[in-house]
Length: 378
Image (tube, rainbow, N blue to C red; front, side, top):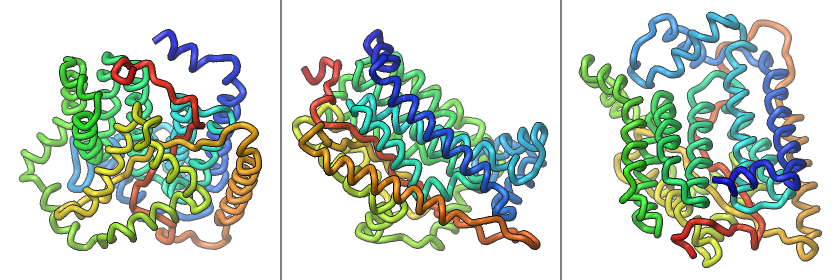
């Protein structure tokens, strides 16, 4: 634990942390300044209506989004800026957590900033965080759970399973996708030396904490004849199920093609000898990608997990570092320039760009600095 705090507040890392925070603030400002460029998205009307009829659950989502919308309407009003403030804040949190995860994987200052910048320019995040939607908070919950899981794996802190359970529980009040995260985690633990945590009572206590948050939604469904299951059974047949190749191509496009070398090299690294301490994350990502195409999985468009590394060592890859930084900066400028400008005249309820898939969160580290204090890999 002491080493974790030394890493988190190390003087030599303060500059990287400051820049990462600056990128997170920049993302927040971008969304706030463009929050009124589109009219109300149709789902926003739905959540506003749900917030007027609070319950433990709804046909197609748990209670979080309705509770949050009710809080926003009570405190900030129902303007576009008010409704879209917290999704923008959630997106900024994802950028910050990406940089922090890169630090824990051993990234240098360049790697941490590069990871945060890649998260900032991802079209998926720019779209989802620009209006009120469950996806923004679902992605934040996944990112926070990943960060806690990295701390558990790197520093061998079993008590953090309680915190992990709390984060996952909050995530289960947003969407039910953390159940798939949990399933992939169980399999990933079984396939790696981290299976030792199956003997820890904190793992099971964390699981109980998470399920406790889901219980009200289950009780609501029980009392109302399980409408959620019926909804997803009927709705699932209307969802386009991409082939594995199409799905992977979607990953490339909506996370931005310029980021492909970063997260792809990271995924490969997780299955190398040096990446063994973090192979758990590689298995989790692979299992989730496979499950998306398993029979019956079309009910939910799952978020996928990516934690990887970029091995950009000083000197040897200086040209690559400079090109990557310039390319990402250029892509960021292009993405910001493509954001819609304010249009005069009546606003439309629809027409907001929305991609209904939650996709990979890239965390990147440089070669040689991904050592773990967990005794399982000593």
